[in-house]
Length: 568
Image (cartoon, rainbow, N blue to C red; front, side, top):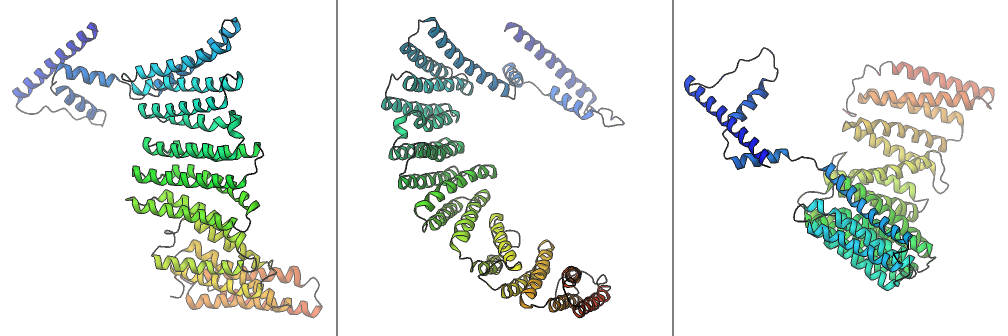
């Protein structure tokens, strides 16, 4: 220590002399010191910065020592944490091997093994508490290892040696989990809370008496879920209630199946309680901490909602098939209401929460709403009304074409419309008239093309236009039974597209007629000529030739059309 102080004193003396010399030279020259600028950049800026730091006076030797020691402290403590965790793990393994050695030598009886393990756990916890004032974060690693030893001691005493009954083992597990929460708050570290979560929810797998009763499982898991949600908000760590939620839902489901339990009312009640508890915990966390959910946190929450839906809906479908879709939609409405509460209470809009809620709502609406509740003959008409409803919502809400409605809901509208569009085009629905529906779908798609083209949304305009052509061609097939009449109708459709393109100066509409010309030619050559009479063949080829020639003559002027909004 004396050597270090001597070196620091020598450095202070040298810096004082340099400062004195610089000050004397400045006084003699009566102007600032100028350095000759190099021809190229080099490191002159770094040298000037170093010179200015040297010329600054040193306030006191103690301040200089403190500054030097602060700069000597490593900025990244990841290696320190790794060493600390490795050391704590080594102590736990050393305790296990000590017990194993004592057992092999015949000195340590089973009772002494359990007592020694418990004492080792308390010793690690006590050592961490003793060192907490020196370095709280680093000292917290020892109690973490002590908790692991205590959990193993309890389960070993109950499962392996049968020294304690299920009641005493359950109480010991609960006390250990509460101690873990207390240590987590004391050390301000969530690792203890995660230990408590794992220890509490794994207890029913090791204690048979807890796993044999559905009511006991519901009470046990629900009580811990409420406690972990409260503690997560108190500690400020979402991972605590997230891990608890995953372990509660999956753990209860596994125990319910392994033990062949049949109390479905209690199982449904447990799932509903867990949904309410964790949704309330997530909203309360955001409001209490004034911390909206981030995108990464929303991504971690989404599988939890999907697991809840996947576990609850089959249970309801088996016992309450008529109410299952409505209960699923009610859960989505409840989640939406919780989001609105958080949105109104927070100063900023929780964008990630909006995506999370809309993703779950889209799933519930598609599966429970569309697939379960909508009759097959009404589905095409419902899909037909979705696009006008979406356009009206955007118009009155003031949202533009890309914002306002979250992308999961946009995907829902697109999927439902695409499914029913294909059903109409291929005439796969026997409950509805494909001709009438085809005309309606074509008219709606043409209207969608008109408005999206006027709004300069080319990524949406072109698909709507071509889909409208296909729907109109399918409607012609359903209305007209004669192949020759269908070819004539397709030709008129193509020529009408070119005529409207010239009138409205719409280049995209004119080029889209190529699809109809190509389909008409392929239909005549591949299908109409195969089984037709000679007169029909001649008529088909003549109509095709005239249509293509007229279309080609009109298409030569398409490239001269300047692209512009439709209708201008």
